[in-house]
Length: 231
Image (cartoon, rainbow, N blue to C red; front, side, top):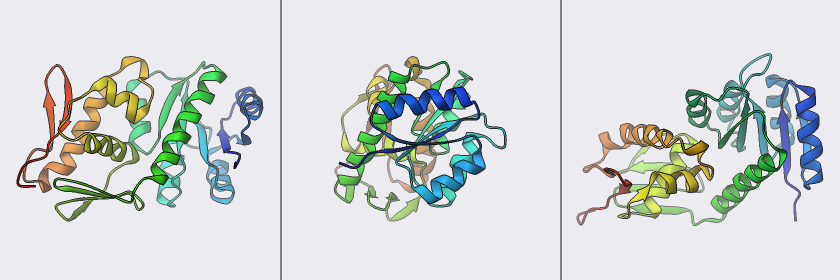
């Protein structure tokens, strides 16, 4: 079995050393760097399986690093670390293509658990059937392309995961807790507002191209991807 490769990006040497020691002990192959520029360079050359990326770096933010990697078509999963426990930062991190977000201080056991959860989710996505089509929406899962009535829309990785989860549970109401558990796998201390934000992002992209409102709110319960008889 291939050993997962983790790239740690943090300007604090003691945190890099802590993470490196813990992850190596857990069986990972580990690289570590201290700046955003180094992160982009190493990620491009070494093709890690996941980044553990500090938000506050000396030369640029972790968000900028992720945006740069995505522009280079490097779709490596990202676990953000930050000293700031701010919901807007969490939303930004997930919007630019992050997969999870942890605040410092953290336990190494939780970091390892979250890395494993992200890697399981990524591996599962890679082995799924290529085409998912429900009602007016068609997803090419190999290419991560999403079409609404034949017209392509651009989604962030998190928007994509949310839409896919709702589509695979079409005509069933999914609670915010279920969505947090399956899309992010961790509940951000119960911050259900992040689900509302992402549903709003999706609707703004889908609704102008759809014949019906596909993502419906069931007040006090959750959300449902609705199909119609004429779809």
